[in-house]
Image (cartoon, rainbow, N blue to C red):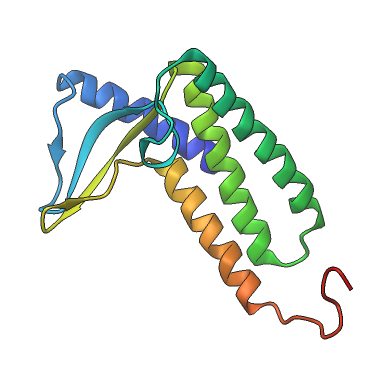
Length: 151
């Protein structure tokens, strides 16, 4: 569902912004729709723009997604299942952008009191929420005494 929502939103927003010559659209005093092509990873890191970087980041996202599928198959509680699904869907959505466009399409711009969060998309939001849910699950899972690694 994340992959579909991400790709549909990107197709609609690219077309919409293209009709506006890619000018930002103010929605509220702190939120606007923009067009940003991110060639790197989170917050634009590693955005050198080289083709090698594009394909390495795509391969990394696919490899991580495959690893997460194995984790997903082992998950027994609903929270990690949802969380892992969010991360997989988001990672594959951004990987598909890299294959199709050579960069990830980001649109959502939040800004408050002169500070602006880097533009993001549905895939980025899903990855972030999924990781946060995994952290919450890890913190809520009681540790079994005497079962620590390395002993």
